[in-house]
Image (tube, rainbow, N blue to C red; front, side):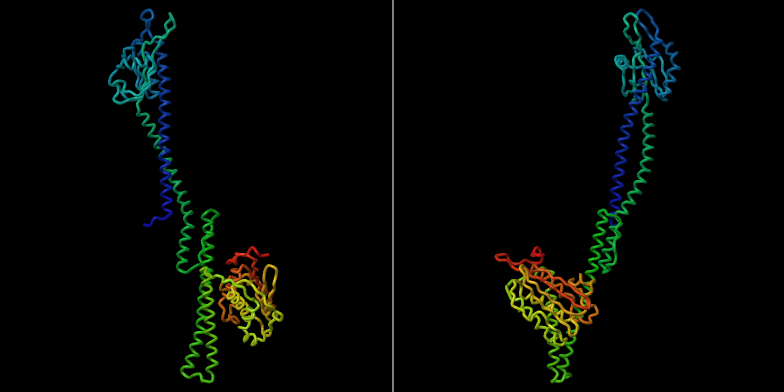
Length: 501
């Protein structure tokens, strides 16, 4: 089974929680053990001192300066010792200095195998309070926690303390095991409950964290199948939310690009199909004799026009390819811009006469030399004039103006006619955009002319703008920067944008 990000994150988080609980349990057991030992030690010490104090009061003086505690006195302390032993779950012993047990009480539930305490333990208890883990030199089968203290009496002569016996209290580790077992049981129950709650929270969080990524994966698969309509819900402003926003923006761009691509293919298919059908039909008519010889020249002229149309289409496609690959370079030279405008205008002499258009602005035109690529700027003027001729109304006018300014040369192309709608003006230079979507007037364009025009102008360091009033006029105006003395050649697109006003 494929390991998903959700499962990986859930496993890692669950494992981290388990390790955390395990370490917490170890630390808790260590602290509880230490606290239990300290509390048990303190409890045994208090009880041993209490028993030793009471036993010291029960000693018998046998001679001057000598006291002993007898077995009869020990038996009198039996009830008192039993109460202490049962209260602290321990065994209590009173022994003389030779280690013989005089009195004992059992509260731990264990029975010692012998009733003598070694002289070594007695000596340690007499010299200083004894605390440790011991089997009491074989009294018990297993080590126990034991505390010993001396039974001391005060000598009347000099007030010094003299030991007459010892008191030992010992407790089994079984009580600690029971305590630790109960503590561990409570911890495990709490840990399981906390882990289940944590697991549910982590599961929900992991699912909510991974869900946008799954949506993006599903959307990406949909994009691969050609469906660009899916969008990812934006659930926040964190990194995932920002990724979702970027993904949706990318999806919108892909959708637009796909729509443009399909329109482009449809336009290219139409542009290629129409002239090729015309050319093939007329040539076949000439070859099979359907078209009489006296009309062949007329139809051959139509074929020639369609071939030129195909040539322009191929050139446009090549220009677009060079723009996309960054291979559209300038071949700078100094040339007469006015002559270039006249040359481009003459290419449309026939349609201008057919539509009875008036050409304005060139009556007193003089030569004006600029620095740029002559072929590219000729294409710019050709595209702008072609666009003006297409959309100028019958009997309308086309204005061509050239203005020489201090730092730039300005060219204006204005034509009467329907103009451009205000909502379409910002889109007019976009690739493949066509204002005449019905193709009633622009039957040969693909929406690339003005895009190429703007690209060429920007390569020269200039800019082009459009203004229009519906049902009155449409005007395109571009400017080219003047080259300063001893300055480097003009750069590519955007290199001279700092020269703008």
